[in-house]
Length: 122
Image (cartoon, rainbow, N blue to C red; front, side, top):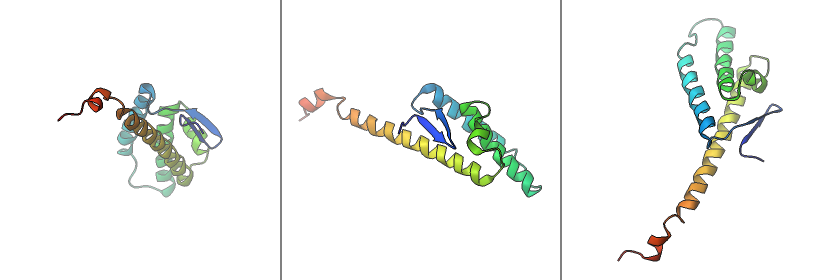
């Protein structure tokens, strides 16, 4: 299993949270999602509210992976269940990458100051 391949709903997209360009896409998508969330209708029919929430998640994926990725990952139907499942899967994917990066960083940190370990302060 590759830590930089997001596989979901028979689709595969490259994404590396440790890559500056991908991190920037995530930042932009998150910022856009927060701004658009404020515009979601608070009243209306259930179907209108569901479609607007699904659109929010689709736009998030489009911002990260490109136009059409949201529909590809979440399916053509506007179902909160499938959209939330896809969003959760992506957040878990990113969380695993971050954990791996932190673990590697901590591993290398212990070897970064060999001189201090050779000559401990008295």
